[in-house]
Amino acid sequence: MIKIRNLTHYYNKDLALDNINLEIKKGEFVAIIGESGSGKSTLLSVLSTLLKPTSGDIVYENINYKDIKNIDDFRKNNIGFIFQFHYLINYLSVKENINLANEKASKKEILDLLKSLGIENLIDKYPNEISGGQRQRVAIARALINNPKVIFADEPTGNLDSKNSLNVFELFSILAKKGTTIIVATHDKNLALKADITYEVKDGKLK
Ligand SMILES: Nc1ncnc2c1ncn2[C@@H]1O[C@H](COP(=O)(O)OP(=O)(O)OP(=O)(O)O)[C@@H](O)[C@H]1O
Image (cartoon, rainbow, N blue to C red):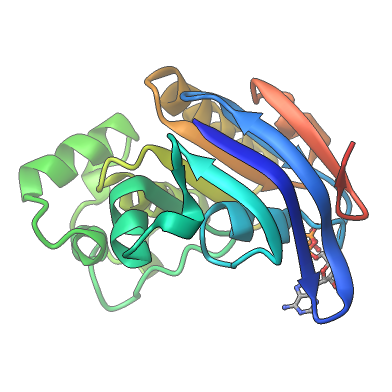
């Protein structure tokens, strides 16, 4: 589903990604591990079209990123993002936060999605009325509302305790089995064991 060829990224003169080659299949749950500063975030940013690589190719289902005309539309139709911090808006309810990502989503659709994540009772709550683990589930719901083909998650459990972290990874595993490709960067090797496949980044190279 995603083919990465000879991908290199420099920040000014500093090499952050060094000739990465990788193929990710549809419905695969991929963990990218590595120490702080190894290049995980850079790799995720480049793969998710947030950052333009210095050189190399990324091909999404036979479309080279270089040929994508409207990158905003492409992202909206294909990609969901989850970050370490949930970035929910505190003065909007859970439902309203999800509607920010898709204004057309009906209450029923949102309720069904929240149900699949086990948090349908939170639909009218505000972010500061729910726990950290619940907020991250809402952030996952927000990433899912547009039915993305692929979800990129950068240290999504960096702010959670071990129980909630495991829950999030188990959720990713279920989503992948349903066909959503999941690519997650984490420094936690134990959590990465939940993924179908793990790649390690070291000094910008895939080990
Ligand atoms: N915006 C930037 N400008 C310049 N250098 C950067 C920038 N972002 C990252 N780097 C450098 O690129 C290298 C890879 O960083 P990156 O953030 O991808 O690593 P990481 O593995 O995600 O680290 P962490 O786990 O700490 O988030 C590091 O040497 C970092 O200092």
